Length: 149
Ligand SMILES: [Zn+2]
Image (cartoon, rainbow, N blue to C red; front, side):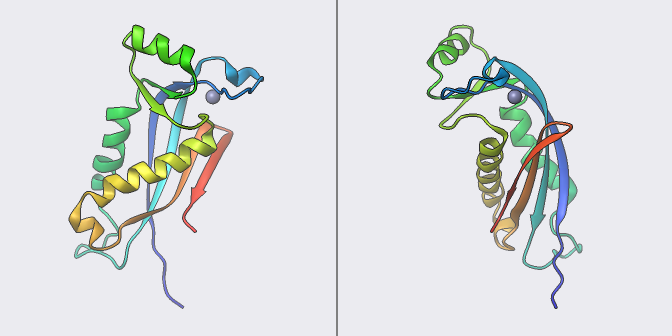
């Protein structure tokens, strides 16, 4: 039996979105959430300090990207032309994505974006530091989870 060790850190940010693509329930109206993401990371062996990845560095890389790009932004689907027009006209902070902004789609996208951020650091890539799970809470009682398979 081999040990499997992961390190995880939780981040919070405020972001607006609305669901489209014909969705008819309340979430079609523009609204915001205090999103919470628990990001879990593994590596091939521990570093010289006995860590998967320093918690401070996880925050610097992952939360750094989240705060720089997503906090107080609107996540908008490229197909939502009306909202896109408004955000551009008003010069409101936004990020354009190619998917309906459900928690399931956001967490899948986030896993790829944050992995790219980790991969940009050679010393992390050298130890295959990888995100293995992200649990994204849209509300305290609702979350979607992405897992590396
Ligand atoms: Zn929502």
